Image (cartoon, rainbow, N blue to C red; front, top):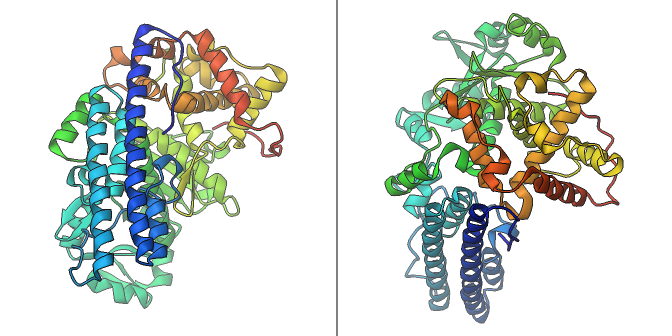
Length: 502
């Protein structure tokens, strides 16, 4: 979280930018005070020859935007009281450390509430993540992040329910009754009430109609590949879901909804609601199962069927990265579409660019060593949009591009034009989410919420980004040009990966 410049525009936009700037300034001031207090703790550690602990304290003092630790990796248990049996010096610095961090968490929580009251939902939720990092037992932050305290454990509602039913989570096999774990590890499988061999089960479940079904907190995965791969897909989807609802909290919760969540202290991310995913063992089964739904299914690598409320993919050996990109793209469609109890055609008359722009942007989502990376400038979607803009001055002006409805966008005339549409839509999403430290982020998420609104008139009359930001498309496009030009260094290695339509 760093200082941001105000964008030119209406008085409303200037007011919003100013209030966000004030919040950022308060955050920076509090962060500096916190770092100063943490340095005092670090010096106490060094005075007692606890040198490695001093280094760990200094790492925890680093602001979230520069943090090398994963701030979303929280303890599974309630913090234990500091033992009175510790040496006096160690006990002194540990007590002070805990107080400094919990005091700072309280300051951040107050700032988060203030941000919410001013309508800055995204910034508010960012702060909640930091609150939990510095005070893992902060009950409101934990609940807002989807956790439930059971005894001395922090768990999820689904996990708590499964454990209460006598199940345990196995890394390879997912949730199993405790009494079945040993037999599964020995190679037996339970099917239709009978214990059979692995080979027999694989033969039966190779028919997708009898495939494995894996339940996770938010997903129902059905596959005829293998139980183990189904469990792995479920874990990847849960990790992605956690990122998505955290990063785009302003889409799932209006300021009024978030205020209720703060007041009630409950997670608002659809706990217990599951998204159905089909994962086929090969493309042949994928096509066979879906050709009635989509006659041209053979040319796609995945799709989301809104009428069936199911996202579909298949195992493509040697194309793991492309497989994941397809999965994240289609599941993004699914999460957005199923945010309502019914699914609707969206972007029918205009603004369809964002319907595809966000999923295309999400294709760049990566997790490396438990750290999320997204928006890599060298991803083909962004790279080729920049190449055409910078080298050929080729682009679609914002006013006309944002006016395209579903049919106009999807039936662009040829594959090459459709690829350009996807690339610019992805790059515009990149711009609106990240320009000037996210000055347009909440406006974009408001735009997205309007596009997916269950009320027909709201969907069909969604305000454009020029209205929502108070900045003309002409100015927005100039900012976009400058942003995209600077996105990839001139000396960057040229990308050889070709573009794809969805």
